[in-house]
Image (cartoon, rainbow, N blue to C red; front, side):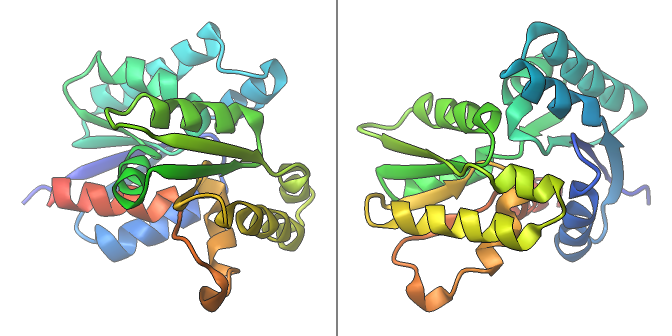
Length: 217
């Protein structure tokens, strides 16, 4: 029997092992295909937003994945969320933004939602996604963790995690739930002492793969 296929589109190679491990655990019978285009995120950072030319490249990757034959496409970078939504309208294959299941879960957990990111280019798309949901009286509090992304680029994940966790603690008393806007921030959740958190903290990678597990199986 032919295996179902999940195609993952990344903007960084570092996300491949994260999602490969989650797929191994939760989608063991599904074939994984990984596509990477690091220039997408680099151009978004350079331009400060998702420009039309960059969005077109995102759409082209989605079309390419669809043409090769796949049962679902997961775009793992929140910064290209709008491009993902455009591409989804052009194919019949399931196309998922990595942060969509996380946002739905957050709305189930509370009205006051905190959003934490290490890049402005990711913070704004996730806030926009929350605000566009059909839910009443949502209150979004956004926080940019300055210096965390630069720490990752320098290879200092400990500093990245410390900056992110400090941001989480700053927001915890003001919101009902916190979402981490970037999939790359998920590692910071493991650094949080469970007994010190007063609100749920959601990361997108596992929630996205859990959602796909219910769809593809």
